[in-house]
Length: 224
Image (tube, rainbow, N blue to C red):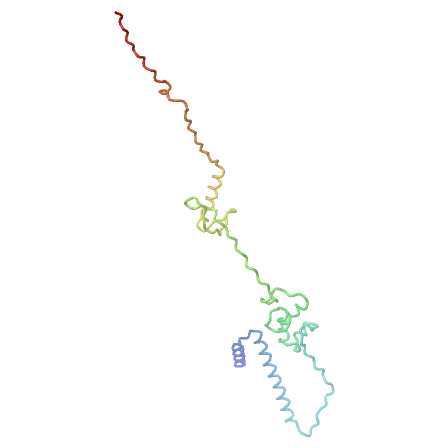
């Protein structure tokens, strides 16, 4: 038996079959052995029986149970687990309806029966039949902090703290950054107004006084 199992494993590995195929191969080999043993026993009995012995007539012929070709036609769970329904038929049903295939025949039949009754669970569904989750697009955020020059940090922010996003460099000091930001918003900024320099249009004091003309001294002529 060990040698037979080794031969089956080699066959499954050679043709890259799955585990469900291994169960079917074992079932096929067992059927072949059963047919061979039945044939050999009937041949041996006919050869051993005396020629003069009359053949016994069967008083009643048992009606041979019909094989179940489609698992959907089953009336009960016992019919699915009976020899009339093979693992191949059960796996074909599972494959056609998106169920897991393979496993022990008892579990396989129970899986098919639950599906027929509309009571399948997530473990019965094949992973290939489950809808794939669409990848979630990552949202990019800008870092809330500023660099040493006072300009906004240009790194991508992946860490959230108190509703704000920070990069890996500023996340450790996020609380302090937010505190300073809030204080700067509360403190009103002082406007620096330039005082206009009033240029006086009045002339300088030195210019006010006009140069007075010098009086000419007239020489008086003496009357002789």
